[in-house]
Amino acid sequence: MSAMNNNGFDVVSRLRTDAHLQYLFMGKQKQGSGRFRKFEGKVDYNNLDMEHFTLLEQSQDSKVPHAKVHSKSLKQLINLVIVFTKRKGKWSFKLYFSTNMELAPKLLLDYYRSRFQIEFIYRDAKQLTGLHDCQARSENKLDFHFNTSLTSINIAKVTHWLSVPKTTRPAFSMADIKTMYHNELLLNRFISVFGISANKLKNNNRIRELITYGTIAA
Image (cartoon, rainbow, N blue to C red):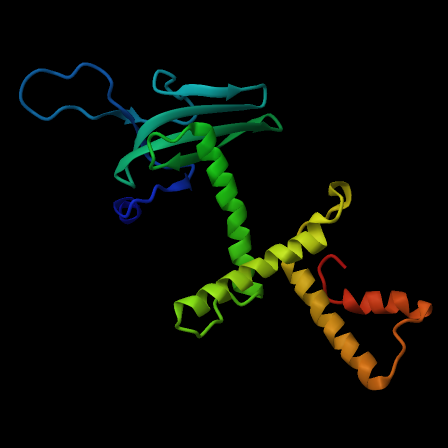
């Protein structure tokens, strides 16, 4: 964390629900020798001290308090937003934070949600479009490879997922799309070699079944 901050980067992430956080001491310091008191006790997530928190949003099933607190594990001050949600009569919460103390709480949540979506792109690129498979050493060649790997996922999403109406849109699966293209390539090879007519109406359903063979959502 400190390495990121020292290089000019701010971190936006999520903490464990049992993270040890401390309130900042806001009272009057004692006179005399000794260093000033910095902290005022551990944050109890089931009983927040609202003198330290600002309530950003509240409804019957959710509430979003915000505060600047100290993280014992990170050994630094953090900008904290807690999102409480109520489901089936039980309250649960998630802890979001940033090392940028001036970052607006709503923007902090927006950044985290955007980052979370970006992670899916990198996961699919590593597993399915060869993000790690380039052996080039040139900076330009590496840039081209990384852009091609990531762009192919975005093109697949636009072509096969965003084009489907939201009401009937299934979960996006790059693995399914890759399987379909592989099946189509193999099927076209069979058709070409064995002289099978792929344009006959009676073969449409069989060809569609073969193309989607092995996909999760088939």
